[in-house]
Length: 379
Length: 162
Image (cartoon, rainbow over all chains, first blue to last red):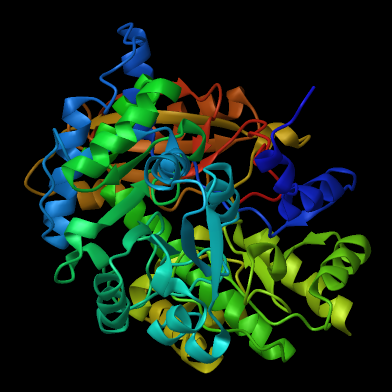
């Protein structure tokens, strides 16, 4: 069977290989998981159950249930003072991942260059490639606190790109960007007429300062697509529900792709999401508070071990420097010797080399045990 | 949240956290944690530290009962006086004044149903102000102090995920 050249060009996920390794071993503590160890708030789960009991198992509108789009628009208004029309400027998708994929297919023509701030979520580069575009990695580094800079954009050829993708708070570094730091990026995007694809899935998991959406900066709303969802903050990963906020023409284009592929996001999950927005913010606050304690714990342990680790301020990852030059070899040896799974940073692209992604979305007892094992491995 | 509130929240979550780990999680130093815990103990805010036990997983499951008590009061005797007579019995694990159809709610623990029955009939019911007791034997415990019992759920998350 012929496989398309575009698909052949994309290698299997480096994370996936680690996943297979961990599956073969017993007594593994995984600090590789990119999802909450909490369960979705009961109220949201009840709403999902209730929707099933009432037989709400049909498709919804392609763009998502009107009540959910209204609730999402209301949340954006409350939190960022950003007004989006629920009928024309909100698209509900099967996870933020689908929203991002749909955006690539809606905005990228074959050969289009798409700048991607890295290290980054592993799906951006393949997503651009599948859409026929050319990913242009824009490395960020520890010297700049893993923040994207206008200099890096210029230096690495983003000026002639069609679009720019970034994610703050960032997976895998945990870096965040303040309004002040985003301003030069916005200026660059305006100057070079870039469409900005801002993945803000970790926005609610910001521990120091407030999250700023780049769409709030002058002249940015009209060129930005904001992605968000319920997976991370509401611990609803398996329900697969995300959304995009953008001007009408962008949402119309994205919906054209979405309606021919996904048709509509899962109905049960949409009912859960409405309840999550209505009733579950206390649960988000509680989960964030627990992540924050774990973040401080992990940073403190690495510090005591003498491992240099950038102070992550968001998401649920830290990104320490690998104690060995070869981070992949270190991760494999650690897994083999102590049964602790961490992910080598280079799978997240440029700027990730020599680092490890360590997720603290796991219970304190396991986290403490894992850190003890890492310390023992280093001794 | 101030450090005392956060400390209480963490100790309620797991009273076995070491002071070193508490300091790490709170972003403070160990001496501050020790000082705060000592202060909270001295003020009587922290009354003690107990394990939450799923007795079904042991060979010595005690018998527990919830006992509802109705009382009558007079000019000389108030709720606190009745509570003072009951609170010292070691069989009584918790004693609460509640609103509703009865006045006191007791949790009684003993080695057998017979012992629980004898305790209620010989020690609790004879208190002059107590007019009625209703004993409910505890048949199964699904959740205690925030901890769910049972086999739990396997963590079926991807070991490593995006």
